[in-house]
Every structure is written in structure tokens, then in C-alpha cells.
Image 1 (cartoon, helix red, strand yellow):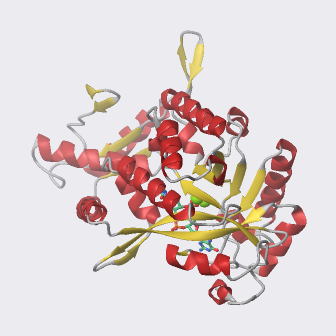
Image 2 (cartoon, rainbow, N blue to C red):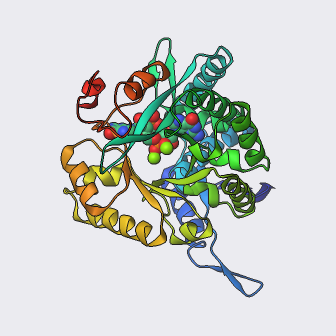
Length: 368
Ligand code: C2E
Ligand code: MG
Ligand code: MG
């Protein structure tokens, strides 16, 4: 056994025959991590992930074997720990990701990425209160690629900083042409909160396009607060942003840790209830109970709630009755290019019901 550096170790098992030997060694190693370690009188839980490559099937030299064990390791990490055997698909997956990353870089450099805007409505009146900026990438041969696929790639390749800056700048310029009462919501990658200076940059961007800080909301996920060393930086930046008047919402609540401590560690202005729960309303008792509890909890804390992914009238009715403040979803409208926003806003009086076809009746697209 050898330490390769940092928190990475290599184990060579010379007498392994087939997968079973490797599997039982991996399981034995993982079992050692089931109990907490005593470190300076504190109990510390440590996790481990293991990637396994086997000679001769996966390679016959050290370089090839360790490279493939590494790929298997990342697969294990993606699956939240445990162990993973190398298989050929990992390699094609890796090549595929590499190709996609190059294409993403080119698309970004050529200005081929766009931003669409999805209305967020006040549930009681269905009037538009803001738009969420959502990245779009139309790949020349593969068609539309979801941001949930390419944003993680941008994070891995170190492009997320530049990409995030661009989204914020572009969306703020767009929003500055909207009526005063309409806000803008922008998603932040946890990585954008890992180095000091974000708050400063945001405030400068807002000033540049004469957009009041109170019209901007930044959406972050809990994972931004998870890594101990970085959580402090993130919290400091978030506090600076709040002081400047920017709203901060907790996105995708219900997935991940959903820790009440995170709700307490920062004065979020809004909780966004993840679509997976909204979809389950009325279909799954547990999810329904969780949504109700989150709305109640937020109310007590004086925080607004936005339900994500409302697709049916029944979901909307249920949420209004329970006092959920805002919502977004195909029931109201899909995301649209910026050129379509003024028509949606302009052809109806302020506070008008987005579901009722007023003059212009722009919302035929809402029905999914
Ligand atoms: P999110 O922030 O939770 O955004 C909501 C997602 O739900 C969007 O997916 C939106 O199109 C989708 N959605 C909204 N209503 C409905 C509905 O009624 N039904 C269904 N099926 N879907 C609905 P999208 O645009 O694919 O974005 C996925 C995720 O990618 C976003 O989740 C966000 O985490 C990330 N993302 C998008 N744009 C950006 C960005 O500019 N920066 C960063 N860091 N992440 C972004
Ligand atoms: Mg969001
Ligand atoms: Mg979300």
C-alpha cells in the first residue's frame, strides 16, 4: 500500500484472482470506515471511495492500470462512495466528456450560448414577479444540451467563473429594460462562491447597468455551504450581497441534505422547493407532507417559498391553499428568449393573471 499524495492511496493486490478477491478487499477496507475515528478527543467520520482496475484485462503496465483505476475512482465518487470496477464505458464516457468540453469552450468563445427567461409568479394572483435566467446551449449536431449536463462540465474545466460572469452581466442588462416591479433571478454555481470578490463583482455589474440590487435574486444550492473551508468564504460573500440589498434564495430545497442548520446559518430570503416534490403532490404522501412542512417552516421563519416545476392546475391549487408564496413551471410558462419577454409583460396590466388570456393572450404556450 502506498500514499500517492493528498488523500489518495494505492493498494496493489498481487494474488487477486478475478473480481471476487478485489471486491472482498474493497469491502474490507470500506468496513474500516464504518466507525468514527478518535482524533484529539473528537469523533470524526471519514468516508472513502475505491476505484479498481485489474491486470491484465484493464492494462498490463503501471500507467495504464493506475489511469483506469483513477477513472473507476471518479465513478465511485459520483455514485456517492463505495467501490467501482473499471469498465470500457467509463473510458468512452470520459472521451465523450472531453469532446463535449471542447465543444462547450468553442460555443462560449463564439457566443453561441444563450439565456432564456422563465416567469416566476405570485401564486395567489398568478402575476409575474420575476424571471429566472436559464442557460441554453444549442449544439450544432446534438441539438439542445441541458444546463444540468453542461454546467457541471464548465465547473470541471474551470470555465464556470467566466460563464457565470457572462450570465450575470447579460441577464442584468436584459432585466434593466423591464418594468421596475419585475425582478431577475440568476443561478450561481457553488464554485463561484469559493473565492472572495463575488459580492463586489455583482454590485459593480448592477451599477453598470443601473439595476437596483433589490431586483436581483441569486439562487444557490446547499452544496455551496458544505465544504468547511469554503463555507466561510461563501457565507461572507452572501452576507455582503444581502447587505447590498441582493436577495438570496436556497435552490432545489428537499434534495441533498436539506439541513435545517443551513437554513439557520444564513438569512435566506426564499426557499425554492424542488420540482421532484411538487410533481409528487397528491401522489405521494411523504412528499406532500414534506412540501407542507417546508411551507410552514418558511412561514415561521419569515421566508418566502417558490414551488418549482408546477405543471398542473391541481398542483397550483394545492400550493395556493397551503400558502406557498410563489411558483414557476410549465403550467404558467416555459422559459423564453429575451425578445419575447416584453410582449408577455407589456400586453397585460401590472398584476394581471398570467393564466387568464388577456390582450395578446401570450400564454397559449403555457399548457404543456
Ligand atoms: P434550476 O435552477 O432548479 O432551474 C429550474 C429548472 O426546472 C430549469 O431547467 C427549468 O427549465 C425547469 N423547469 C421549470 N418549470 C418546469 C416544469 O414545469 N416542468 C419541467 N419538467 N421542468 C421545469 P433547466 O433550464 O434545464 O436548468 C437545469 C439546471 O441547470 C437549473 O436548475 C440550474 O441548476 C442549472 N442552471 C441553469 N442555468 C444556469 C446558470 O446560468 N448558472 C448555473 N450555475 N446553473 C444554471
Ligand atoms: Mg434555479
Ligand atoms: Mg431548482
